[in-house]
Length: 114
Image (cartoon, rainbow, N blue to C red):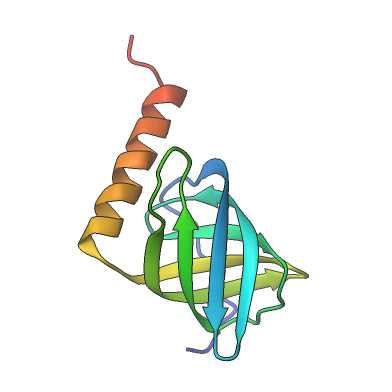
């Protein structure tokens, strides 16, 4: 997938987070810290260089959850040194449900009802 370089305004918010993730691509395994997360993507500060358009498999360890979430297909959208943004392409329904529940709980904590 080629990066088009077009600027697109996000219609959703990423939630600040700090959790561990492993990312695999081709012949390497990288480890990083996810800095923000939404249903469609996340930002990672990793220990292995990636390039825009690269496809990865990611294992994401959310806080307070014992079992990591495996995301089968992620595409790197942008890179700044070891910091990169990734778009989720393929995730299991269970993974989608767990990420959604985690994000909903975080949003409720940030925006308590009156």
